[in-house]
Length: 122
Image (cartoon, rainbow, N blue to C red; front, side, top):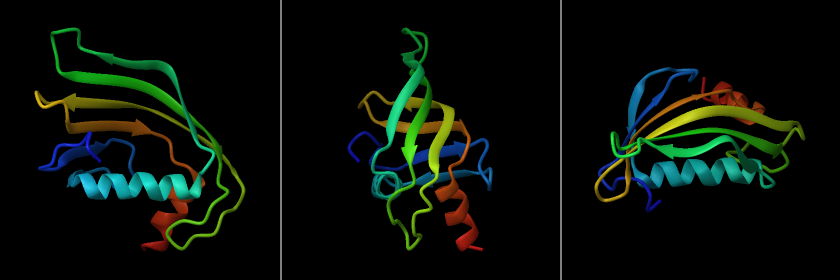
């Protein structure tokens, strides 16, 4: 929660089911992380290329990541299917002078839990 800008973080999910800009509060972002971890309690984040900053030229940080684990927990009223967690993507974070994330751009794949969560909201 503390890594996000208290005024909110601007998010662009390039591959999102609903690919738009939105602003989320630190509480919303932390809650979403906890929902994801409840569904995937054994989730491990690994990196193809670890976080790398613009080396003084930019305040953007880039990470090329992937997650491994399984959908073994209940979350958001959705029961687990036991399917493997195999998602990957790239995330760019704009870090402010206060060392909080003010903007992020995400390009990624989706896990089965996220797809079912979106379908349950229709």
